[in-house]
Length: 306
Image (cartoon, rainbow, N blue to C red; front, side):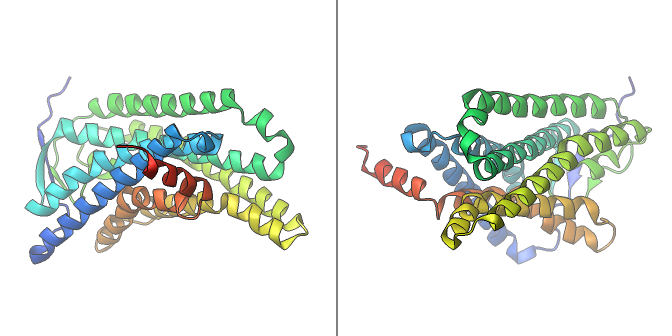
C-alpha cells in the first residue's frame, strides 16, 4: 500500500471574518445548543407520551437522532475553525468526518422517504393506514435506514482509504466533503467517483423521485376533497414534512449541482450551512410549533415532578 505524502489537512473555513469571528462562532455555538435541546426534547416527549406513539412521531425521533449526529459531526469543529481562522486536522479525522457525514445524509434521505410514504398512506388510503403502516413496518424501515447508512459509511471508508493523497493539503471548506477531499488524491479516482454517483442515484435521487410522486398523489387526493375544512386538515397533516423535505433537498441539490469554482465557492459554503446547521435547527420547530399533540405532551412534561 502506498504511504500518503499528506498526513494533515488544512481546512480554511471562512477566511475574511476578522473582527466578526467571535460573533460568528458564538452564533454557531448557540445553534448547536439549540439543535441539541430541540431534538432531544422531541425524543424525550415521544418516549414518555402515549399520545405520540404513532408511526410518524416514531420516525420523527429517528430524524432527531440523525440531526443531532450531523450537528455533532460538523459544528464543534466548525466553531474551532471560525475562532482560529482555519484548522489543521489529521487526514484520518478528515476521512472519518466525511464518512459519518455521508452516512447520516443518506440515512436522512431514506427516512424522509419513509415519512412521505407514511403521509401518502394516511391521506390517500386512510382506511388501511393502521394495517399498512404498522409496528412491523416501522421496525423494518428504521432498521433498514440505519443499516444502509452504515453500509454507505463502510463503502466510503474502504474506497477512500485506498486512495493515495499527495497533492495540496488545503481544503477551502469548513468540513471534509467528498469533492474537495477526493480532489487531493493523486490516484485514479474514476472508480470511487462512479461508485459515489451510483450510490447517489439509488440513495438520494430515487428517494427524491418517490417523495415527489407521493406528494403529487397527496395533492391530487386533497383537491378531490369537497370540504374546504377537510382540505385544510389534510394539507396540515403533511405540511410540516413537506417543508422539511423542501429545505433539505433544495439546499442539497443546490450544493451538488452548481459549480464550485471561483467566487461560487462562497455560495457553496453558505448553502452547505443550510443543510448542516439550519435544517437540524429548524426541524424541531417545523414539526412541533403548530402540532397540538406536541403542545399537550409538553404541558404534561412541564408538570412532571423534578
